Amino acid sequence: MLTLQHVLKALLGHGIGELDFKLPEAFIDSRSVSESGLFFALRGERTDGHLYVDDAFAGGASLAVIDRPIQSAYPIVDLRAAEPKLPERAPFSLLTDDSLLALQKIASYWRSQFDIKVIGITGSVGKSSTKELTANVLSKRLVTLKNPGNLNNEIGMPLSILKLTEEHEVAVLEMGFYVPGEIKLLCDIARPQIGIVTNIGTVHAERAGSIDVIAQGKAELVQALPPAPEGVAILNYDDERVLAMAAKTKARVFTYGLCPQADLWADQVESMGLEGIRCRIHYQGDSFYVTAPLIGRHSVYTMLRSAAAALSLGFSWDWIFYALKTSNLQLRIATTKTASGALLIDDTYNASPDSTLAALNLLDDLSGRKVAVLGDMLELGQYEDDGHQRVGIRAAQVADEIVLVGQRSLKTQAAAIESGFPPEKIHWFPDQSGAARYLQDTLKEHDIALIKGSHAMHMDLIVASLEIVS
Image (cartoon, rainbow, N blue to C red; front, side, top):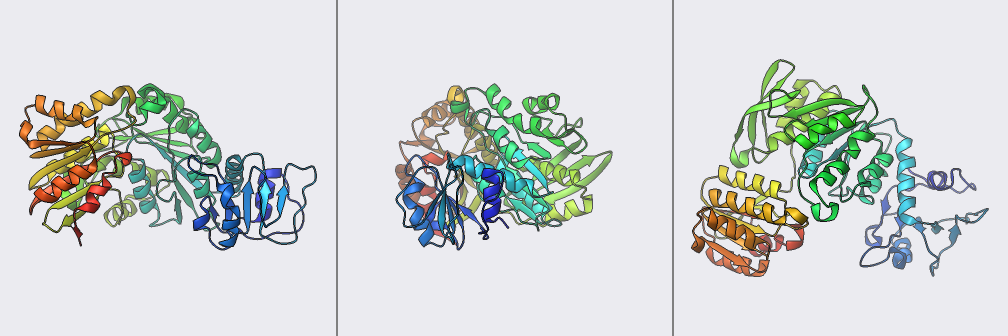
């Protein structure tokens, strides 16, 4: 377990004094600090953690890391001093140059204390589902750590690594991306030996600039892997930008996809609606039929990635089949019914063109009157028009009725109408409240409503308003 002396060695290169105590968890929110926790005071867009250091101590924290002097009822040790001295007991604060950098240094040091396999996962779409399924599969046999929720950035991933214990045998870590250099930083901390790249799409293109820059940033994962045989780069054969990363790594390349040229590939993919998917998997000349409780045909890629990771760690096919079939995942797509009897497919966490098209394909697999409720897709940059238009064309092919939310979705509306969809069956609203009222009045028994949009569109409020019943 992480201790005070580990923290000091990470920040100073050596320990000081004799005082030592355990730090079972690390936090950045003073409201969620547990007994004896380690609190990092970080400056955010809305507030500053330095305002809540004493609140963290009142909540049970033993140690805080700060990067500016504060008024506190507890001692402050300036680690920038020539000879810093520890107080006789906790709690107290450590003053450093940069709290975030200190978090990353401590996480990197803590990672170095473990001889453990680390799997890094990145890509534009499917990171979280791949992380969840991979961790689920591996946990059938190995003690597995994974990022909680979407803690996949320069703050969340180090906090996840600080949860490592001597019991863990493998860590599965999702790595987020906005601009080049971010994934390299995460890899410097986590030191993955296995890297999985899902795909390259236009999500976050507004920040990154272009899809080529996104591909460059995602490639930092495979560039950070150790050489073969220790390093393994698991790449999507069906995505040309991902496949091109094979030339950028010294690791062993393991490809997956729906093409027979891939090392691990699938065909006869069949969606069983909300009951899961089945397919035939091919590997080294053998073929196997597999079923898994994953929603939508696109989930076959998630299955292949997880199987590839398990194979890279020496799992047998018997173990992999068992783990896939018995996986009990809480993925972001949820289904429930309204009081009127309509089925809701809640995919409101976020949206990109690729993930929205996949959700529409799932809607196409189901039986009933289909209503596509789609909000704006944000952060697409130069790909905004094309993305909304592609979604409009597919929605016109799948849905019986289309409900749109947000200014950008007017492009979706225009594309659907140009595709021949009846204008009277498209309903546009400037925000989610109008769409919620419309759906409350019109959804009925045997209707199926897919609800999806970027997180900032708050499409989840539509779901919450529809009188959900268990």
